[in-house]
Image (cartoon, rainbow, N blue to C red):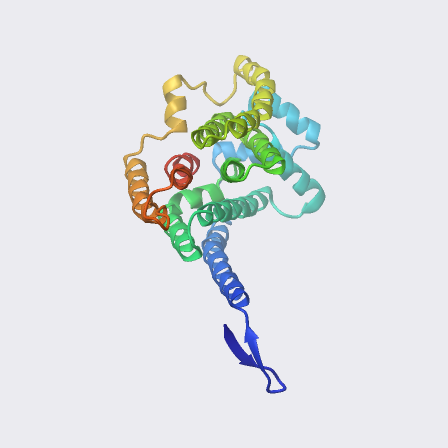
Length: 326
């Protein structure tokens, strides 16, 4: 317990909790500053950056005279993703910041979305480790994935929203597995719906995350929780089924996006990158080395529940993160 002197010269004790809170805020603010600095540099340097063909289509959709006109253009095949990202940009451009160019608006939005995704990732790591370890881990991750983060920030597409809602779905699912509550289950279902609404391939990740959460709960003997976690993916599946007829219509009309075969879908979902595989293996080994001693209880034995809780952490890094950022 620390001590400081007030203006009256009286010694006053400082509780350890207050000092820890001040330290936590300092580290958190430093972490946010480190995250924000490259975004500011990228956004400044991208002022005159030319747009790709798909980015130009996004900008033209956002500039539509009405929201109905924009949605109709998407249904005709100009964009194969649900209109969540473009709908947000249209509302912002026409009612909130009409003087800002769509490119700058969307890139600033992407920076905020990726920053939020990294913060959620930090909270997920913090759920298993101490603050110092979590900050070091997320900082190392940012350094390793700097090129991907730059792409997600500057690309005027829905990928940044896709990553954010993937991270949010993972986080809410893990929280629901650890401490089941109806609010957390509803949050997981809503996050899954937002994930499907952000990108057509979101259903793949929503079902994968729900399956892993169900398996984790079932292994721990939480049968009822596993059943409830399985139900959280139902609304997302229903939303995707409602979007399937639109995809079929777009395929029949013909659009600028070629129809991918099964191998191309698998490659885009799980990129066969050697560096990504090596990175995943390195992360798994590092986590096993760090997690294993922390799962020892006071009697020197490995508690079954603690070990499976640790495997949930391995699941976050080894499966979810390469999928989202790869």
